[in-house]
Amino acid sequence: MSWVEDTVSFRGVIRRSGNSLVATIPPELSQRFLIREGQEYTIVGMSRANPDFEGALQIYLGFFVVLEKAPRLDLVVENVDFGVLEQVLKKAGASSVVLKKVEDKSVHVSALFTAVEKNRVKLPKTVEAVGQLVGDVKRDVEALGGFVKSFEVVETVVESRQTDPAVLAKGPSRLEKAVAWKWEI
Image (cartoon, rainbow, N blue to C red):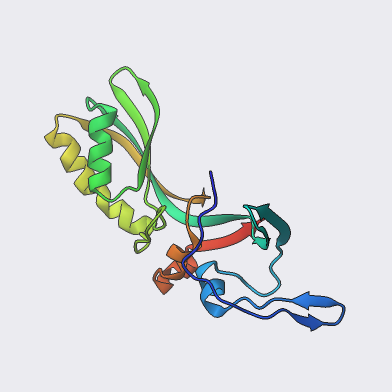
């Protein structure tokens, strides 16, 4: 996949600091990419001749990794297929639903209730809030002729590498307790 130029650009002047040359990163870019003081990076020299010679320095930050504490609902349901159960759980606010196994008439699934998605951030749900949703899920499953055989709500840590840091930068401050992030080179 090719690089996409960001909408924020600026002109600057390279200055000297000791034996090194220094370029300044403006606040708009540091906030957009959630760059912190002391963060590691790699600089890559780049050039092209098309037809004039051009040069560039790419400051490579690495992979943006988000770690989120999120509630997970594990369910065993009878007499309802996975597709229908997935729709019920998505309606209840699940961000993703995974089929774990099928045996006889039972479907075992895990539903994650994350606040951080690829292109948006929602208010985080607590384990208690997801526990309260179970009653609604049971009613919906029973209305479809199914039965919730067992359920458990636990907190788990979810890793995502698909989130744009700008999405987190614009997110609600309540995320700070549930979400950590880092750049990995």
